Length: 83
Image (cartoon, rainbow, N blue to C red; front, side, top):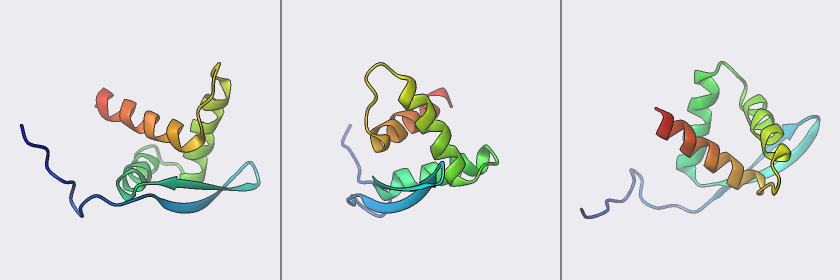
């Protein structure tokens, strides 16, 4: 199997500011992850900031919390695998 570039090609991270618990935070994700995160927010009938806050709350509870961007990517991958 030969890998194929994603639609739009390979692109670097895009930084966005999201407010979590009243505090703005910057998150850098590749455009495909932003698209997937926005789709999951719609699927769960949540504002994007609420979904990110929920992922952040789970992330903080782990023994060795990763950074927020890594937690979001891991959560999105788990969602994709779960179908």
